[in-house]
Image (cartoon, rainbow, N blue to C red; front, side):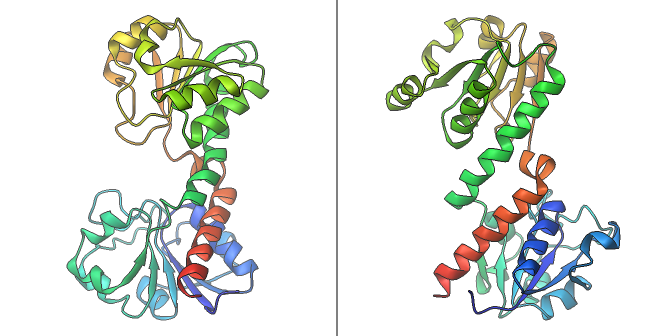
Length: 291
């Protein structure tokens, strides 16, 4: 058990609320701020305060995911409060431990942040691995809703064999799909074949045939107009890669191909699980750093 008792959570979506509940369930004091648009019953397990009071009464403060959407304001979708990320705001955190996803974006908002103990939990390996499951489930949920056929028996392509690609390919195979997985590295192609999928070298993607469903996990423009014209004219494309994604969406629209950029799926389809992952990751960091 960590030697900290008071946590504050400022802004964010229902993932942050779920993280707060998980922390409170472990016996710690939690204070919330910037959730005033929600029914108070949703956060009745915790105290509530304005941001300054929340920071003052907490030892550890968890900032939202993403921490900012415009590089200027704190991300507070459930509040009308406009909190400017600047040196004045940073000074409120003197002597506090701060957890901020996308830490680099926070540090760009003021030089004073360099004086604050800030940790980024988003890029932790356990966070990324655990988030692959709700991401894959969310992608399949979209496919079931938008695709006119069944996943069972469909020809599915997963581009990329990283964390999400591995989980997604396994789930699709379990649903009875014919699963093809593309990758660049030879060792990845070997693992793809060993795990029972059909490997496709990225260099040969354009000649790999037509697909019913394409799930992209590669954060680079792998599905351009030329590739889509050969493999995706009758496909539903679901892009799971971060902005700008791996799909030429303008070309897809021009070609009449349905392409969906599905971002932040863990928070949308499984906020409870996502919040618990956030809590567990933060506690891992605290145990490592404060041991």
